[in-house]
Image (tube, rainbow, N blue to C red; front, side, top):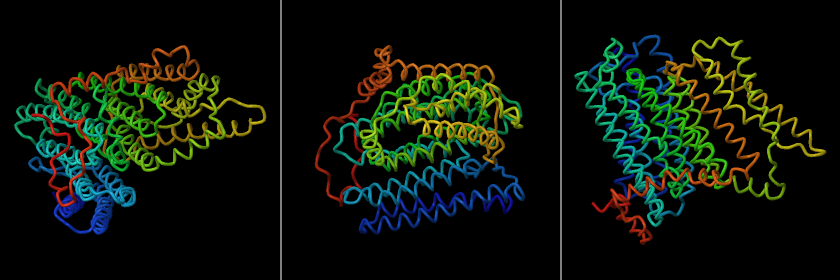
Length: 532
């Protein structure tokens, strides 16, 4: 590596070191909580500055003066997409830190919270630098271990303990799959270095070991991103503090998308692995998208939204649209963090709806929205030089934009607001399509390798979901039975919970004990301790 590459690596490593120092200090210190928060926030914003400088270096200096490639023997290496995610996660961490100072005021377990939050951020930064299977597996396991303390922040809430236990079991299964994937690839390549793996695949090498390695990797990511049928814990962790939910949904769950973008060369070895992503992603997006229509709790609604978005992101990876998956990850993280941290505003919105009534969407607008969106997307695409944009992806985008064009039923004397909203919706659909065409060449550090057959399959699946959403709203009485099943997520979580508690039982229902004194909190074992 030359000086430019070394500087870029040092800048990428500094946020991990600073957050590690913050975690260690909070873990060992007996300072007042207010001072702990001040120290954490200082280090978090300094780390944010280094993440920003590291991204600028990755975008400007490395292309001009460096080769941007890691040495085959290095265990850590900076990359362009990792720099984007590093900035995003550190921004979320700093924001959540400031928010938590007031949100958790008076809570006795704040030292645990501060140490765990810093540990999660440090482990995420290490994962983003992983250039070796061992680092990747260890960093991801460390993230989930630290998250366990945050999810169990309220130790007197049984469902919080149950959700944390289910997540722990799922994570251990994912760890096992990752270890198998690493062992298979390592044995075939002769090294655990990811750079060495990319070089072997780029040389045209393929084998059964690499095929099975990619399949195990995909299954591990499916488990870690809470796709169906293991999505239940993500819904039940709503018992945790709101900033924990924001961190989980905006900065931790979507790391599976980063890993898939990073391992795009390995996915290219196995067509079956990519189809697994397409099927699991599409089913999760479709079912979760329908469940959204049946839920009224704001945080539960957001949780199902995350499942749908994670499904769509993994679908994009399966389709080979890694660039769009990367952009989706960045956009969804910002959107979901804002929604969780702003969740209290739903009370004001509910009061407004109680006073003014909630307008129902026009059936005509729901029927014509899809063809109108198709015209917008395909027309604009014909004028844009989208070098790697398959036609079926235009159809999928049109299906995604179509709900924006739904407008309320027109009431006598209230036509002006309806037309204003329709004009805004049309402008938004045009804007999003233009932006999608522009970011097609964004310097994100992700490529594209379209899988045409799976793309048509995904398009038909998304169209079926749109039809289902329309039927649910226009003729709710005709789908009462199926609506009950949809509300329950087709009871997938009930079956998964049954087998988790049967194979790995825990005393989750006995929560409610008095919290331990503050001096002993940091030495407490993880909550939801199993019988084994």
